[in-house]
Image (cartoon, rainbow, N blue to C red; front, side, top):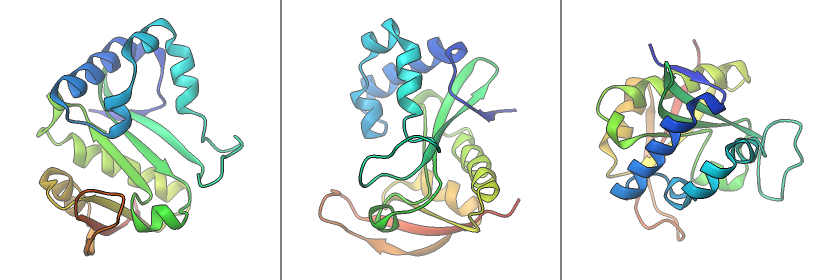
Amino acid sequence: MPELVQPAGRYKASFLEAVREAQSSGSGLGDTLRFNVPDMQRDFPSFLAHLCRFAPGQPLPDGFVHSEYLWLVEGDTYLGRASVRHTLNDRLRQFGGHIGYEVRPSARRQGHATRILQLSLKRAHQLGIAQALLTCDADNTGSRRAIEKNAGVLEGEFRIDDHPKPFLRFWVPTHP
């Protein structure tokens, strides 16, 4: 059964393979598409440290909130990732929300988005978040389905100047 774990070196080969998949297909979150695979191969521990730069206890740059990266894995296979934001700022209240997630292209349409969101909501509940805000592009039917399967309630469809597509905002209960 897939589980959420802290990013770790044991998943390096599978994670890098997933990044290559996303980059070759052009399908992934913006930072995934910009990751420098040769640099990550050379110094994976530095990349892992970079993922933890917004963890609680770390100093935050202006405009950022504490958050944690978690990876969905099964055995040593990386399936996807989540970012659980511990609070919201004005920007995240508008677009982004408490939880962002991504499933590697070869693992899509297998229920992993629903699972990663379910486990991320449990983590949000542990942080004292009763209702999590989630957003997804209006044309992202897979993400919308995952949110709705986790009891997400649609607030509406929105647009903002710096995002090219209309997006949906959902509120999702985090109770276990």
